[in-house]
Image (cartoon, rainbow over all chains, first blue to last red; front, side, top):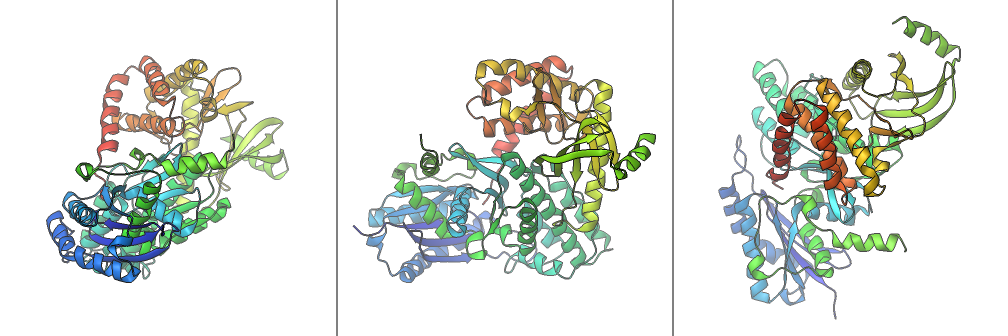
Amino acid sequence: MGLIFALGIEGSANKIGVGIVSEEGEILANVRKTYVSPPGHGFLPKETAKHHQEEIVSLVRAALDESNLDPQDITCIAYTKGPGMGAPLRTGAVAARTMSLLWSKPLIGVNHCVGHIEMGRLVTKASNPVVLYVSGGNTQVISYSQGRYRIFGETIDIAVGNCIDRFARLVGLSNDPAPGYNVEQEAKNGSKLIDLPYVVKGMDVSFSGLLSFVETEVKSGEHRVEDLCFSLQETIFAMLTEITERAMAHCGQKDVLVVGGVGCNERLQNMMEKMVKQRGGRAFCTDERFCIDNGAMIAWTGLIQYLNGDRLEFQDSTCTQRYRTDEVLVRWRLQEDRERIPN
Amino acid sequence: MEVVEVGVKHDREGFVKGDDSLLGHGAEGVVKRVKFLGRDAVVKERFSKDYRHPILDRLLTSRRLAQEVKTMARCRKLGIACPALYYVDMDSAKVYMEYLHSAKTLKDCLSEPLSSLQPICAKVGALVGNLHAGDIVHGDLTTSNLMMRTDGSLAIIDFGLSYLSSAEEDKAVDLYVLERAISNVHCEVAEKVNALILESYRQAFGSAKQVLRRLQEVRSRGRKRLMVG
């Protein structure tokens, strides 16, 4: 018997990615294409799905080439079951089903958020951190407890990445390579802190009021774009760092793992590091290869699920736009729990 | 506020004594046990957070300190159990307050057997009901911020995020935060505990019905939110 390999497909938003991972956690391939929407526009489901459909076959080929594996060497096919945008998700699911039938391999459906967490744990070796998951569609503070990744805090309206992307469009920044990246670069030249609404409710945050406020500030023409970017980052990242710290204090945990696309932002990483240092813990961050949606995270999580007996029947291989992180029973960590606490 | 001035001198002359034993390291600051003019006291000190921009940091620290103190005073006025306020030092962002003897958090209480939880839940619901009847929104209503004393009385602490509001939405979010804090850590008893709390909340607070209706909405908003990766 050779090693177990999983091939994973991620396509829940504007990235389509294919990854191949071994049971030892080695990443043999992790290729990705991003749909960049025209300036001033966000990505829409139809166009995004079309982009994914055009790219998926060549990406699977590239991943197989890079890993030096044949389809027969792959043990299972994992794909993102949700949450995400319907049409792009379906593209990934159809590709996964096709490969499953073509090569007679079992299918595994993966929760996108759990995928981010497990990939972060694999890459950083953080065993039981509080997780800040920040992306275009999600803003959650998560901690593992009794078989589930439980959501302690989250946004009560829009996601942080969505707030940043919409802000970037307001001030006319490009979507290439990513709106958030361009905001980060502009912010480096800003220095004046504009007073923006700071909304923290317990472990929850809210960004929609802040976004409308910024909109009026942008229209007033009184501020430099650099200062607006700077103030936006300082305010929203301080909010995120604060709710993470609240969750750490509440759960009695010392380490933090930051995952999701916004997690590549160096200012956010820097704030997290300063915060945990004051508490005597460690901050674990990953770079853009793993923070941003990718196929390897789905492959890796799918592989763990496979080893824990998960199988998805062909007729059940659907996808869903709504799929909360705490709906997944994290079987593999129940096993870890048992190993940690002897009877 | 003449007490404040006297307090400053006392502080400098060493009237605040104690072994500075650390009671907790919360998100906003540290809480230590001290002697204040001979009484057992707790001092809550808000540190400057070096991850925050200095202007934002000063603003948040002073705003929350003021809010905490205001709400504590309002609670006492309304007869809601919370630590008595002894002394405030705005310059060093320290609040001295009553030490709640042999009290433990609701979080620890909830690990007790279900049968003993009923009176606890009734008290939690009543206290939160009274709070909301007085238009106080706590803003961080978790199980770490409710303290049960050995005599069976319940007190509420940590008002840094509190504010005054009569809006149903704000009160409903308060309840939602508490509900989730319970469900996250005490999954097995959560349903029962939450139901018991809301029942006594309803009895303690006249306008509870409207708030609970709003709570339904807040819950479904949380659960049904579209989550795009």
